[in-house]
Amino acid sequence: MNPRDGSSDRRIEIKESGNLRVVTSKRIFFIAIWLLVLSGCASYQAKPLPGGENLARSVADIRIDRDLIALPQLKAHAFAEGGVLDMDGVAVLAVVNNPDLKLARADARIAHAQAFAAGLLPDPTLSLTRDFPQNGGPGSSSAFNANLGFDLNALLRHPSDSKAAELDARKTDLNLLWQEWQVVARARALYIRQVQDRRLMQVLQDNRTLFADRYQRTQTALDRGLLTLDAVTPQLSALQDTQRQIHDLERQINTDSHDLNALLGVAPEVQLPLGDALALPPLDEAAVLAALSQLPARRPDLMALQSGYGAEDARYRAAILGQFPTFTVGFTRARDTSHVYTNGFGISLSLPIFNGNRGNIAIEQATRDKLHEDYQGRLNAASSDVHRLLDEQRINLRQLQETEQGLKRLMQAAVQWRRAFEMRQIDALAYANLQASVLAKQIEKINLEQAILLQRVALQTLLGGELPQVPNGGNGS
Image 1 (cartoon, helix red, strand yellow):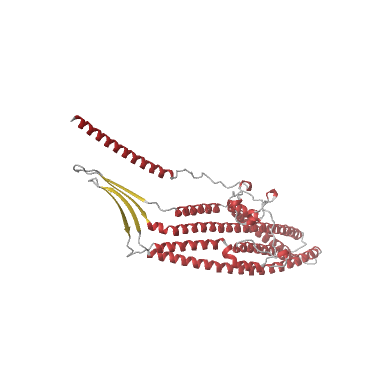
Image 2 (cartoon, rainbow, N blue to C red):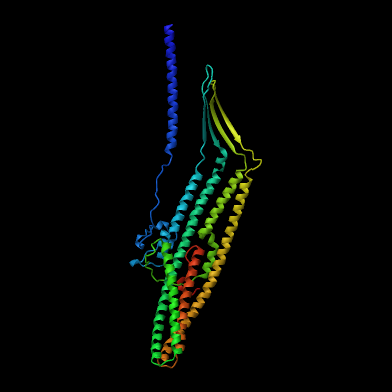
């Protein structure tokens, strides 16, 4: 009896030892799976919010990252010695330091992260259950059920979803580029306004000095009884009108200065060292019109719409694939309470009887149609705007030429009338009217130049690049 009992104990011991080895192997397997899952997990990194503004206190504080600049002319721009900013220099600072562009670049990073997420394959699902009998008889054991499943429809939709996300990311990049061009145009426009307003201010101040001197002289003559009141009043009116224009222009210059500082991301109190270099080279109208046919390959917003249309077309295809039954396949390993092991598989299908994804198909199709109309409308608007600006350019250039000729004649007449006024051959009212005409013509010239320069900035934006000029400085618009 003892030997048999002893051998029986050893068998039990071996069996129990075998169970221990099985349990240990399972634990190692699950631990390895858990560590593998954790190895791909991201860790949390805190990023506190800022406690105050961080606007640049000078132009030197702005870091010029030329990798952010897409326009070749701006990318190669060299800043002038002495820190003076020309129009392209202001545009460069706007591209690299504009707060709205920084936010748009953050949105672009989100779009790329979404494209990365869409490009990942869907994960399989694993379900585990374990049952423990409460009143089982001899030979009963705990039961378990392990199921590994995979959604095959998600795999079928993956190419379309991934392509849509990639095109969305490209659309975001192109929209960012288009926004950069808008900021460049805004910076150039504000630079032009600042330069022209300073020129206008100089004209107004010179005329204020002139009218103040005329008023002082006529007032002195009135006090001495040499002139009547009707000779003094025109001088006073001209002086006050000039002073009013100076006050209006001061407010405009202040507004434009703060707008430019905000656009460049510098503190409001910073005085930007702006130059005054502006040129009006002749424009090649034929080349401008020829560039209209190339707009779909030049304009970032149009290329963004192309990518957006492609992304929506991919979503439309994915929605069509979604009308088919949802198909999920899984493999099962189980054991019941009677210690019987089974292997099997399962398939689940959705029956597209009521829904069939028809609603999503209709939505995606309508959205694609809208993008199609938006793209055509953008092309039509660009063509109309370019033709309108070219017509305005011709009108303004003709008027500028006439204004310059008229101003030249008025300046010549002013010299002669001054001599006549000093010799008292004409009265003060006539001379004041001539001076007012000179002032009005000078202001008209400056305003026309500003309008032409702003129109060319708009043309640059509409054409998606630098404006073509007449070779060798020939006659142009």
